[in-house]
Image (cartoon, rainbow, N blue to C red; front, side, top):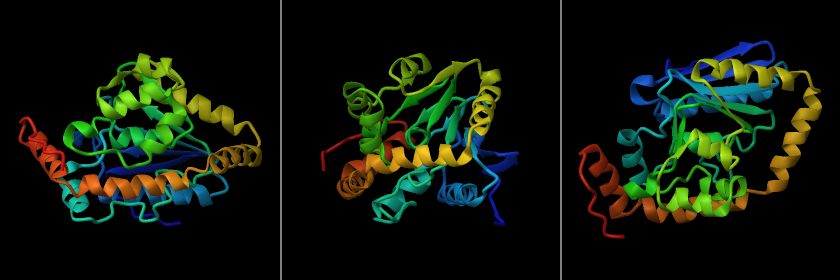
Length: 259
């Protein structure tokens, strides 16, 4: 497959390993719609290429893995009822990818960035990495699958604290609750991710793919994704969803009305 990718998303192939890099460090690796389309295209290529067995997803720099969607672009579209990727409401990031995905978290992993990570299988973080879902503080909710995935991946009470309070977690706390697999010094992050990918590549690719497919399919998350999208629409069409991001960009306290 020939891919015409923007500079903001990189895709490399090293033997049986695909390396995908979110490359917008000047904007905290925030995603645009163009970047979402590029990532989807890369994962489609990864799925179809029989010589690629494992993917690593990371970000450029050591400040941010991904800070979510670019609010200046995303909020007007969402408030207008337009889709930002995943028009098929039964899908979320990587929900139909049956090859292993490793996340190398190189800094802030918040909002949409944390939602991307929840769709991956093995997560390695730098010591300074930070995790969080602060959407409620801005009158929003994370509709990238978090309400369905997160309570299945970590304890219920911790998931609800992240969703309802909006505070961030340190790498140490994320490790303690099982959200990530390993913490390493930032200069060792990609080496650690590559070592795990190489170990997986020593196994039968058919067995590995089948093991993941069984786990993903039996989880039956699709009805939850549809519900999340349907109920989320009432939030994104609200006054508060307009007010929260506007207040954030204007560096002031939001005036929420609950409607």
